[in-house]
Length: 131
Image (tube, rainbow, N blue to C red; front, side, top):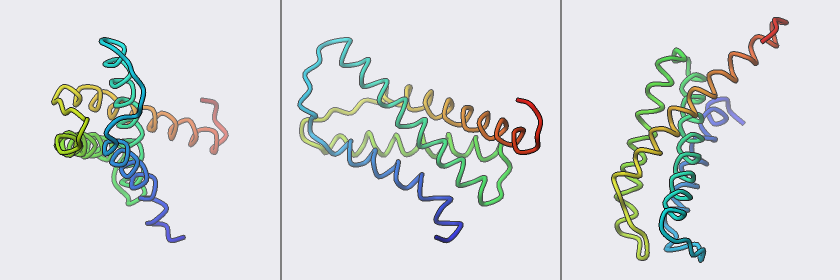
């Protein structure tokens, strides 16, 4: 598999998963009130942490500086979140809220930070230094 495909396949798969999940009218799970909001926020957080980490990986593989890659990955992930909220407006049984962008942003930031830390620790292990 070409290097460029390996670099961007994770981001494409996560983006595709988010799209497929957002296109479902309902998952048949009945949750009420704050429990429903909590579950929704956790799912958004995890989805966008994975997406931003995958985007940052692709950008770093293309040669972008890690800090710049992280910033751009967060921006792209949040913009994807905006398009996801617009998409949900047209899916019967789904609702759309700009407030969903808060856990999207928090997740994207966390995903970028965790992936940067993982890369740093992995590099230290390869060089023989202790983390």
